[in-house]
Length: 376
Image 1 (cartoon, one colour):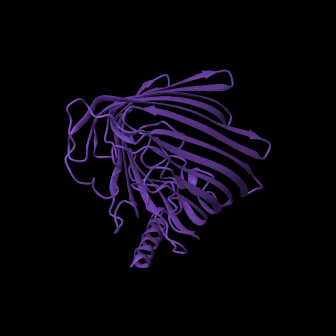
Image 2 (cartoon, one colour):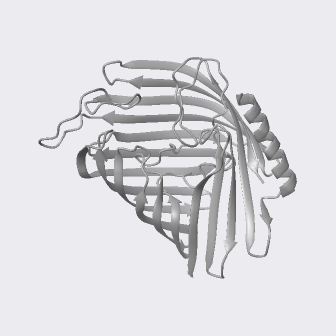
Image 3 (cartoon, one colour):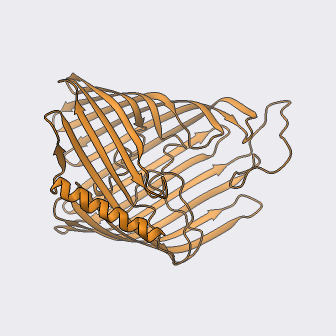
């Protein structure tokens, strides 16, 4: 039963909290440290069919008046200093959406080398740093809202990858300029997308707690049908994002826009805006979030013939033409309990539209979420 898994997770959290003594980090040895985080999420919708951005894996539709805990997770990161310049980071999480029994999975595993002068190289299994919050997606305590802005399938379906990253920071007066370049091979969340090569370049300028970030993403991939018939080699996807955070007195303003164009794949667009007002430990906020995927029929190469029969359940036909979109208005608050825990409550008014034939649809629902999360 779901409630038994939920209770078991709470018991694990209590044990870990007792073990950590409410610290942000546990120093096991002089060179080895352990950090942890958790989220306990309860969400309910007043109608069927709403799909929310997921923490991990493929999100499922919400059923009317059913409380789900799909956003619940626990994570641990191990950091080991091999030498003065070289370190190793390993991060694993256990989430409802990864396995019914909260089996742990490896999300990060990389070596980091410090060249000095704020220049770093990372190599291994990493996350594509396209949108803000990518690296802290699982650390709910780090964000204002109950759910991450970053979709679980990353930039156009490309999320984690094996490769290298260069990070460089320049200090110019009161400003910090951060450059981030990434290259590697990504494991796309759809099996029909293979042999992926991804590149990313981003720059972020900061002053105090204000920042502005722009990121450019490019990927090449081979596209197959569900039964391994090649459709297109070296298909291309390009995406650009512009995001900012700005503080004025007690007001906290976030805004972001992402545009994407792709060959033989949906064009992806995301936009969001939020305004919060901090009153000591309490921060009420309002938020707007919109997403869309624009589908066009896939053009088969000359001489290609599809096998008879329908595609597997849940797979769109190659002739899909239309748009899937969602739009949400949210009202919520975050209350910080001490320095390492937070309680959040959020109400969303969500509209989802699907104009893809033969069954176009529109769904409207209110979604209610309560989250308790923290660090240990």
